[in-house]
Length: 180
Image (cartoon, rainbow, N blue to C red; front, side):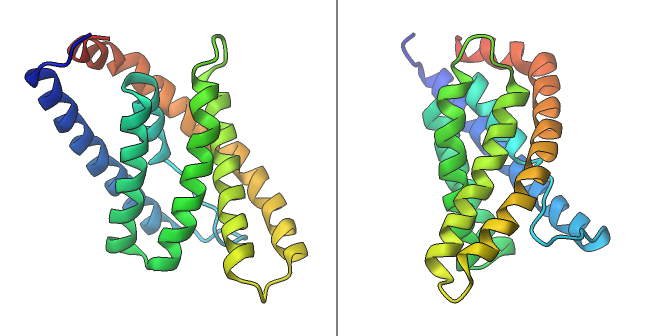
C-alpha cells in the first residue's frame, strides 16, 4: 500500500508514543531494581522490550530497528553511560536479529519469540563484555550468562504474554490506521 501523508504522520506519532513508553517502562524497571534487589546483578524484567515486540508484529522491521536504536540512545543518555549504551545496543541488535525472522514464522507464538529475544539480548551483552572487559575471565562471563539465560526465559515469557495481550486488545486499531 502506498504511504500517504496521513499514514506517515500516524507512523511518526505512533513511533514517538512507543519510544516514550519504552523510556517510561525502562525507568520504572530501574526504580524497581532499587526497591527489589535481585540475587544476581543485571537481571531485568525487560518490559520495554514488549513495546519492540508490538512494533515488530504491527508495524515493520525498519520501525522496530529505529525504536530499538532510539531507546538505547535515549535511555543511555538519560539513565546510563556509554558502557551501558554499548551493552544495550549489542544486546538489542542480536535480540532483534533473532526475533525478526522468528516473528515471521507462521504458527510460532509471540511468547516464544520474546523468550528467544531475551536470551539473545543477554548473549549480545556478554559478547560485548568479553570484548570490552578483557580482564574478566571468559569462563566467569559464561557462567554468568547461564544464570542470565534462565532468568531471560522467565522474563521473556512474561514480556511475551504482556505483548500478546496488548496486541490482542489494541492491534486492530493500529493495523486499520496503518493500512495493514
